Image 1 (cartoon, helix red, strand yellow):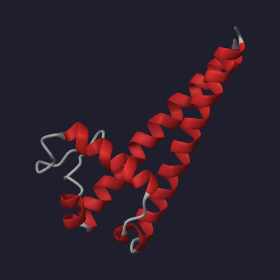
Image 2 (cartoon, rainbow, N blue to C red):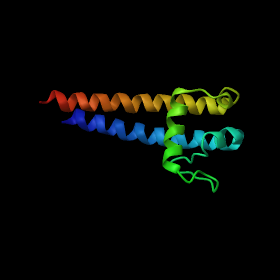
Image 3 (cartoon, one colour):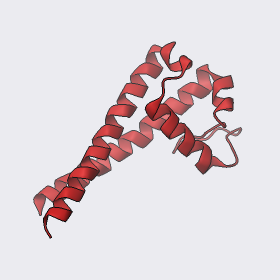
Image 4 (cartoon, rainbow, N blue to C red):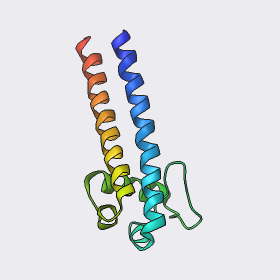
Amino acid sequence: MPMITVALSVIGVATLATLVLHGRLVRRQHEIARESWERDGSPPGFAWSPREASVVRSWARTAAYFRLLVGTPPWIVADGRARVLRARFRISSLVAFAAWAWFLSLILGRR
């Protein structure tokens, strides 16, 4: 039972880190690459939302989440702070996904 608790704790911390880092990355895009942010659908972060954010927030946020997870737009390449945020965002996402896989293997292995 303790390993399941550890796995759930890692999932919680990594997921929270991912959401915070995504919000910071989207906010950075809003600050330094406003045109790109608007082309991406004006997505809000999970805890940050400017007035001009998309009215279809959930869709824009989800699309931006996956676009930033797998892609590297030019505004990230040009900004050192954005590169660091993107790297941390990817690492925390990878840890969260791995922790979910670990958790599922623990649960399914008990059967």
